[in-house]
Length: 93
Image 1: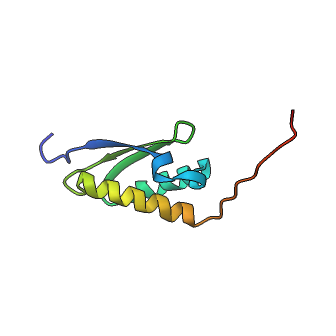
Image 2: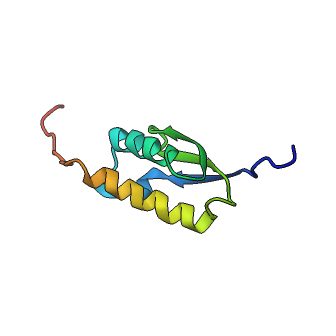
Image 3: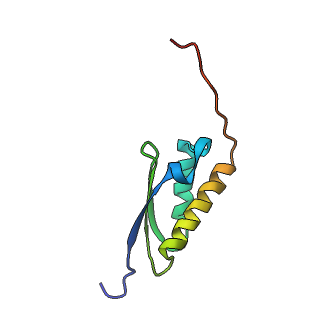
């Protein structure tokens, strides 16, 4: 189809984008929703269990390097918007 936007796909490891205690399924879901709203992003799918974000985008609208920077920035913003706590659970055996 002439004039249709080119499409590329980029995969992100959400455990890398949301390091340490920042990674949780809720943050991963929020990141996916925010990434979908980015200019040049055609679609974004998250799998919270495998910690993978797949982004379909128009590389003419957002270059791959810029997409990577923006996704990592969005991930940190979403994770920092909520408090995370780590609890040690003992004595369950």
